[in-house]
Length: 244
Image (cartoon, rainbow, N blue to C red):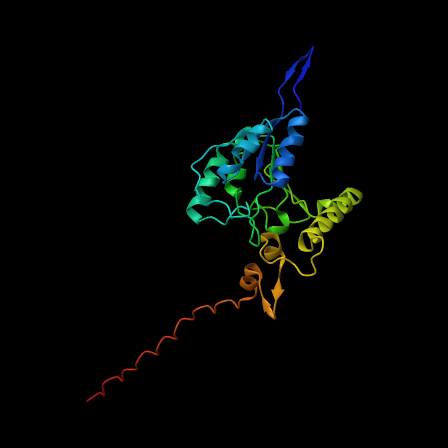
């Protein structure tokens, strides 16, 4: 990743493009910068621009909608037209990068498709795409969860369950988060959760015999039956005139 200056010449640093600047994306930016890479990052939420720049990365600019995130700070599912504009902005960067790390996800939805098969043709052979959204469908069209796909010299790594590769650290962080969650649900002296708290409301699945979580309600709604075309009427048979 880093810039190398030798007697034989200078090798420029690798260029890394991070798609999505959530928790995983910001960590990827920080790690790539520490390794000496030139880092660019893309996210549809204008609010994360300062966070990206504070880590020393370049923020990929494009016209952003004002309502690109939920009240909780998560990215929202965007329209097909905006997704096309995102793909155009990303496509302009792909021929110049060495590594793409995909982290863009939408809570409770399929991961947005940011890199199409056609866009891969513009990338240099040897480029690596690490798709951390593989389990949610992937940000790259050719991503296959748990597999490494090669297309025209580009390697697409469908990473799954990465926490399992560092079980000790993952267990430590998971247990700490569970402890903090229960401390929030049941503060000192409380015997019932505070349903005025947004964390409690978001974590509650059922309450008083009913489903309380809107995301779960939406997932359990029966799919609308597909409209079936009415069968075409059989053509009327016309009797041939009798010969005189």
